[in-house]
Image 1 (cartoon, one colour):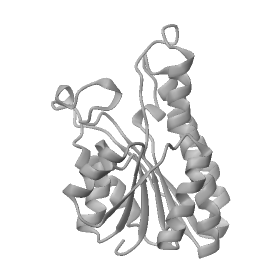
Image 2 (cartoon, one colour; image 1 turned 180 degrees about the vertical axis):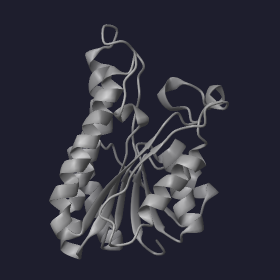
Image 3 (tube, one colour; image 1 turned 45 degrees about the vertical axis):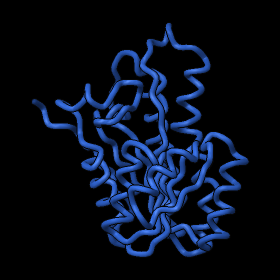
Length: 230
C-alpha cells in the first residue's frame, strides 16, 4: 500500500477516519479523505500526517466529477477507492418520510455509483485498481426500522457484483467489507451506548486495510465482520 493513492469517502469520521489514519500512519499510503464539511477534515489532518482533505457531497454528480478531476490534477492516478460514506435513519416504513428514504438511498448507494462511475475510466486507463465498498451485516439480513438502510446495503452488494464483472477485464478488483455494529455515533446513536457490544472502529478498519493488501491474483474479497457475542 506504500505510496498508493487512496480515496476514502466519509473519511473524517467513524470507520472512515480509522481507515484514513491506519493507511497513512501504518501503510505509508497517500490518503485522500473526502468529507462533506471542511471542519471535520481539518480535525483529521491535525491528528495524522500524510492525509489530504477534499470536500464533496457524494450524492451530487457534479461535485463527484469535480472531485475526481481535482484528484487527477493533484496526483495523476487513483489506485484505490474506499466507498465508506453512509447514513442510517432508524424508522419503520410507515414512519419514514420520503426525505429520509432518499437521504439513505442517495448517500449509501447512489454515492457509490457516482464515485465508481467516475473512477472507473481512470483505473481502466492506468491498468487497474481496487474499489472497496463498505456495506453492513444488514446487507445480509433485515430487522425492523432498517427498511431504507437495508435496501441501500442489499443494493450495494448487487452493484458491487456488477462492478466486479465489468472491472475484471481491466484488472479492477471490487470488494466488500460488511461490519456489524460499530462503536461510532452512526445512526444517531452515541458511540458510548455501543461500547459493550460493538466493534471498535479500528477493528473494522483493520479488516478493510487487510482486504486492500491482497495480491494481484485476488479478484475480490468479501468479508462480514460481526462483534463478539457477550
